[in-house]
Amino acid sequence: ELPLTPSRRSGIQVMMSTQGGESTGLQAAMQIFGPLEASKLMSVSVNGTLSIAGDWSVSGLVSKGQIECGRNTGDRQFVFVNNRPADMPRIVRLLNECYRQLVPHKCPFVVFAIQLPVGSFDVNVTPDKRTILLHHEKELIDQLREQLQTKVWNVESVRLSSRPGTNSFTSNGAKAKGKDFTTSSSLSFEKEKENLKSPPHKRHKNEFKARRVS
Figure: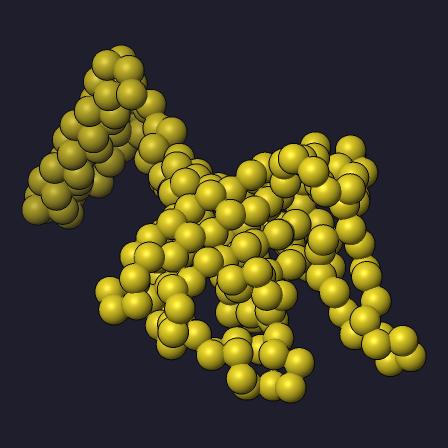
């Protein structure tokens, strides 16, 4: 099942659910959101190690890094911490920032199941226990950012390909042409310096000759 949210009238209300069984995350998303939405998603599985607390892992679903797969709003972003639905604004902000490096002005669909070591977070912050205090939040976010940029959406490869000069001419002919241009520019500059050193009457004569040649 996906998030259970309290209803003011009847206590607990089931927002959405699957048929259960051995279905995968993508199959469950297809049952809940339909095949079109599920076709825009991909599975994610990353992990790391916090210096003091221990190992962490994330599994779930995110939007593919394509313009037609992003959403205009963040209305379908679900985060769980150790199987507990949680409000994690900094984690969600990180996901949006990384995704927008690939797809500007769009938000990803997110189902993020985070598994953290026992004792590395505190749920006794608000009465509904949806706000979770992470004891090593900065370290987790730094590691998660690296995983998102290199393994999930591969932001680094896009960033490298968009740098100035990466798509420049690489053939020998182009390089030679660039070299010739530099050499001719240097020669023109040297001639101009020599012309400025000459007496005024010769300088005008040289300029007149240059205009006739051109």
